[in-house]
Each structure stands twice: as C-alpha cells, then as structure tokens.
Length: 107
Image (cartoon, rainbow, N blue to C red):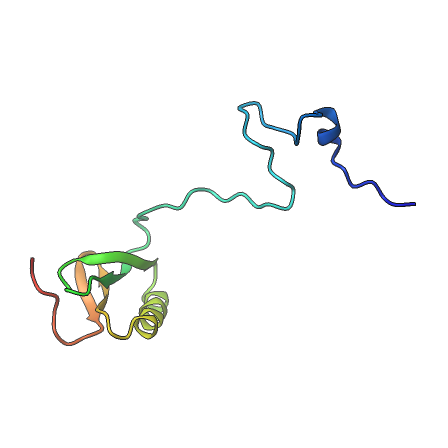
C-alpha cells in the first residue's frame, strides 16, 4: 500500500498549499530561512575590494573579515579569481595591500 505524503495543511486548504496570515506561501520544512545579509559590520574591520577596470573606484566588496588571517585568505582567493584586476585589502580606510604595484587613478 503506497504511503500518502500529502501535507495535512494542503488538505485543510483545497485551493493550494498552506499560507501565512499575510498571504505569503508557507515555507517548506526543507527550506532554511536566513536573516538578510548585513552590508557593513563594524566588527569586520578588514575589507577586500575589487576595483573597476579603470581603477578609479571600487566596484564591489568581495569580502569582510574580523582577523588579518581570514582577510588574507579572502584577498589571496580574490587575486586568483581576478588576476588582471586591482584587488585591495584595507582596514579602517588604510590600504594594507593591493594586487598591482601601481595605485588606482584618483578620480
């Protein structure tokens, strides 16, 4: 005899799967919910950035870290991923390392 795997909440609502009170679909028990990412965390003082091709501005933050050891791992991985691009490692606005000898062009 086959096992019925229907969710009891589905049976209670014939129009479809269960929904939250604010009409969002209920989350499957197999889906993990994570909080929204924090853009900047003060405790993560080391920042690894990828610069634009022109090297005038930082294009995006590739990673942040709370320790120099972890920041170096992020920096090294970024240099391997973007060998022809400027990657910098900074702390508190002070540049500690950059992937190329020439500094970015000032805007």
